[in-house]
Length: 350
Image (cartoon, rainbow, N blue to C red; front, side, top):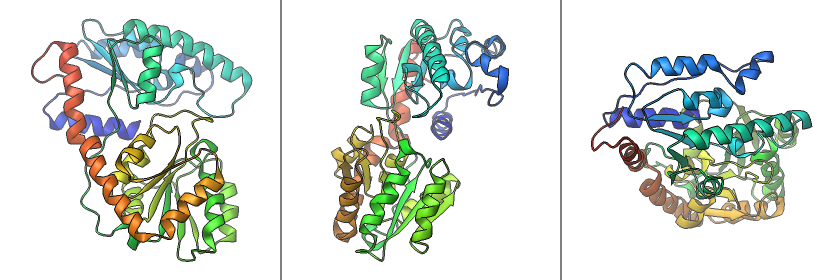
């Protein structure tokens, strides 16, 4: 969400809009977590900020996690829109396994938050078709589907078929499919000794992946958490980028990795049900495999490992499609059109 928000602000400012960012002070701990339910301080601060002067549009992001639903009613006299970066407000858990009492409390809070959001929001922005359908089903007004976006990087200097690295970038967790990818790699590793597997990220599956890397010390690398530029460098020299997320374990609206890899001209393997699987299918820029299926994932890896020309062709197709649909230059005008319609303006907004 933070990456998306930075790109959004940069794109709006480049288009000539005035943007002021309002954020929480930091993650709450202990009894302060009660403010996640209703936060009068944040509500008052936002109301004061919005009086200097009243904005044309207020755009919310992740209020249930970072602030509280109380801020939705803080600003009067301006239309309100919210981007749904995950399904927490729609009742989905943050993690695949959590204590039953905590899960029940979050679920009950989400029902209240959803009612508040429906009452105050003038428009809801979904990052995928599935999320848009879900928002409409829950009764949100003016649901718009505006997907993920990023600046278009330069043309890659190497084609995927010339590279020998498989890259996973994200949280090392069951819902992201990190260990699943490790098991699939083991199934093809002996037949393709030139291939390497790189995991960029941190998470609860790291110990399992470290044991796997111990069996393949020259073939599997865990970089830990790295900066965005480094992730892009890894992907730009990859044969293949893999994002085998499990919607069964935790629904998501991305992942951004799929879109970023496509913009870099890399073929992608993702799982059925992942929203960005539509990009892979529409472009022919990779493969969509069965979720939580290590054998099907291994077959996908094998397909690109044995056919460098197919990997390069898929990478080119992925980039053409992603540039046309997921470039910042495409997305920002679409979002500004929503702003102008809500604000009743024909020019810029603030």
